[in-house]
Amino acid sequence: MQLRRADILRAARELIDAEGLDEFAPRKLAAALKVPAGDLQWYFADRPAVLEALADDLMAGVGDPPPAGPWDQRLITLAHRLRRALLGLRDGARLFSSTSVAEPNTVLAGRTGMLILIEAGLPPDRAAWTVMALTQFIVGHVIEEQSTRPKPAAGPAGEDELIGELAATVTADPARRFEFGLGLMLDGIRRLF
Image 1 (cartoon, helix red, strand yellow):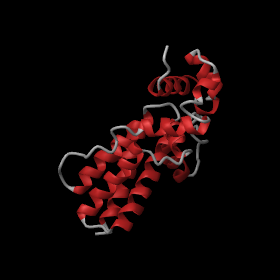
Image 2 (cartoon, rainbow, N blue to C red):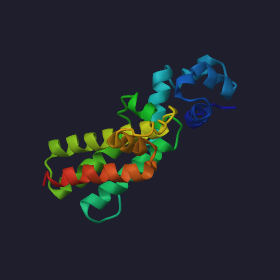
Image 3 (tube, one colour):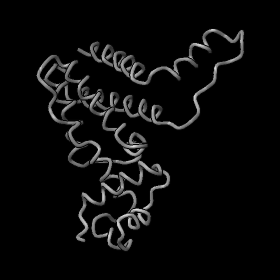
């Protein structure tokens, strides 16, 4: 069987989905593909190279131009695409945040976000900072969403009401929390115009 880059990335996805990012190793990937570990080096020099390629593969389609409309609706579409992409792989947000990807899909997603904001009237430097801040919010949110840490239990009776409210927030529907945080980000971005 001829080994192809797409086959390697598909097998890497399957391994991470099954075992998690921390357990991913090129030797396990080679075993899953039933090839000698050295064969992978024709495509990827090491573990970081595989993970960078996989992170960029996750971003496929995220940077496609959103439908025409107001800038904020276009940015919302882009934000939801990024969240879905990161949720599409176990530990996807951790994978993305642990790589320094300057590959085509990732660059296109950032460029699309910047163009939306530039067309709306932001200067390029502010558009870049805004896209970075929005991306950091989304990645951080999804890291928390994908976390396997146990959620905090309700506190004892008579607990400080504010602490109880904070604990309830952690267990609230992640999609609702995402929408709320995204709304806060958009309100802040609107102040830049």
